[in-house]
Length: 91
Image (cartoon, rainbow, N blue to C red):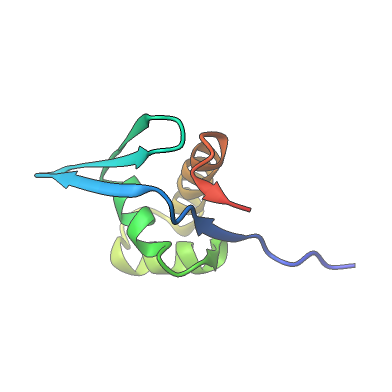
């Protein structure tokens, strides 16, 4: 039986603050501030609309064709796992 793809959703109660080239997520539930690199900030903006990894990879590959699809997929999955580990995504 085939599994449905995971749909990644950002937590809507987090606030994105941008200062120049820097981006931060503010979690008012626990007072934590999370720094996002440029890729993380782009991913966060993209997740304004929940989507599966395949769609995320497709957008990033279109925007940044230089790295291979496989390389981008691995990097994006790692980043999504990190966001999940820090409780920044909704299940």
